[in-house]
Length: 150
Image (cartoon, rainbow, N blue to C red; front, side, top):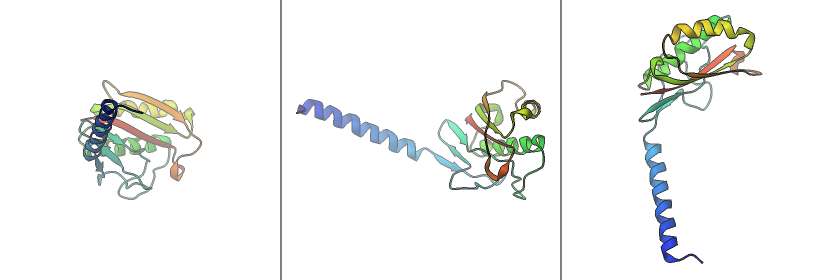
């Protein structure tokens, strides 16, 4: 059996945890810029907190036409433009990106993507992961997500 002191301490820690989680939930906002394509599923284009902006994976969809350009270079540019739009709408930018993840259909396109990527992150590039995946929604060649600080 727990003593009253132990039970009181447990209850205090529990209440503080609930308060912290509630505060966190209230300090996050959905980011849905017009300059990026609408989400293709039940998720947000991005989420902004007091300190960070998290983008969802951005497909290479043109926000005006909802179509994908042909080729890995054009798709990489469009995905990065979409990432940029979400970061900026949330109060961050490519210059403030701290982590980027790239999902590619074919890692043989790695050098081509790096050439495009380098034009978007010209100094102090963020940490990055790049992986080949079996399939990307809408059969895109690439999908890119990022985390930026505010």
